[in-house]
Length: 174
Image (cartoon, rainbow, N blue to C red; front, side):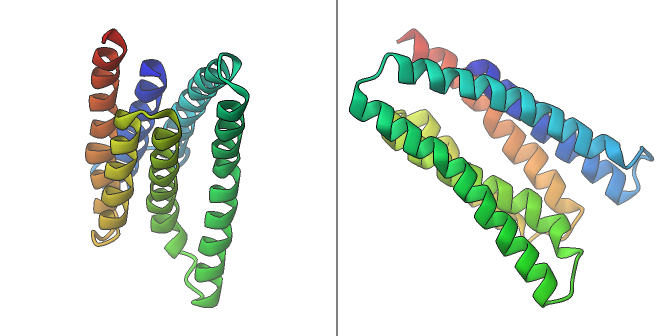
């Protein structure tokens, strides 16, 4: 899980960090670069986290495997619901720019809530606490006007993943 946390930390620090620099005008860069950095880190982190989850399922009891699969399907449900909510809000209020802030913050809220569920199912307090922190930080980031929202997610979200990677090493050693 350490490598997965590091992949997600990369996505947050470099993806959201690049969005902050680009949108604030501090640095000129191609428009695809922030989303490319974010997406690349998310893909790597997701692949590594999926490998950990599949490994856990192989060695688990049938009841535990079922719980793991149910939590796994929550990822699809959470992001489909988020997509519908964001599309609905931006359409109803005729404000397509809402998607610019709702996707990064909303995605982090969904991730945080699912981490809470995974932490409970796996009895992993680190995962549970990381999820709690991410969900609260992402919700609070909506009070910060863009592009500052990206800075909050880069520093606090990325920082949380880096701390989780360090703590995971200690957790696995005990």
